[in-house]
Length: 339
Ligand SMILES: NC(=O)c1ccc[n+]([C@@H]2O[C@H](COP(=O)([O-])OP(=O)(O)OC[C@H]3O[C@@H](n4cnc5c(N)ncnc54)[C@H](O)[C@@H]3O)[C@@H](O)[C@H]2O)c1
Image (cartoon, rainbow, N blue to C red; front, top):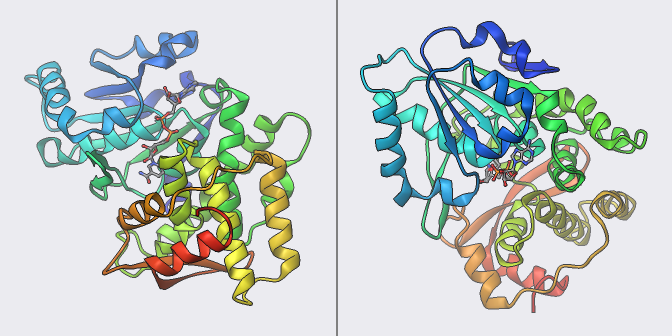
């Protein structure tokens, strides 16, 4: 068993979360959620709550001591038998996960994702991270939550734009697992409803990979990086949403795989047209070579000038291979992502 069945619960509304929250707890939540009457009512059940402003600033290492002081004051006199409940997107669950894993050497953790991206990806896999200045996600721990509650009403409260962003991650997991998630993306006009229906399959596919290598010792999880090598650089340099940047990164990886004779042209075309259909056809302004190299060199998965780049042979046939940073940069320039 991958842990998926026991850990991940799908709920219609926050009010159904009930018994999971018995005992001493602290809710760390994204303050934007206060706009939701249902969330506000639910929050009133808790004595200890800590609102945060989501975003990379929340994960900034320099800010952590002040948050720690604030939270320690709130919890003064409490025991180690504490449960941190994090409600928010990936920045909130990363922050709260890091806090839970280090506070008194580790307390219980429950994650309640409020963004599609977090529901499909960040909340699963046991990773959390803070940013140390320019070094994004470079300080963190592996720390598995006891439960992840995926609440429909929270996710449905997001805008259509956020929906569009998450398709990069959805397509990533579809390509890695070979599961036919792509077909469902276009079901009906109510895209958010179709995504809700796809979530269990997409999340379980991630658990299947994580369970083979929970602490990233064997390299199995490297495939989850599909589309992220160039994606991260585009995200940072062009201030593009994570999921949109990953979509572009998958196009890059597909074209490179095709050139190497690994991926059939028809499959590459299918992948590109899917990404363009859900994420739009707007081209990303080419990066400067220096910015591209700086971004690639800042990749935390880089080792002695080499990166484990994820190539595709087809859906369900994805693998990582060591390539030099210069090879990635040269290919990106050939494909027009940089000049
Ligand atoms: N730990 C992991 O495995 C992992 C994996 C992928 C990404 N991440 C991290 O996740 C973060 C990005 O994820 P994200 O986009 O979910 O993060 P986020 O927490 O920054 O949320 C993005 C925005 O959505 C808003 N928001 C949250 N819920 C909302 C709702 N229901 N309605 C309206 N607005 C809402 C937030 O206030 C914020 O402005 C990054 O910090 C990234 O490093 C972590």
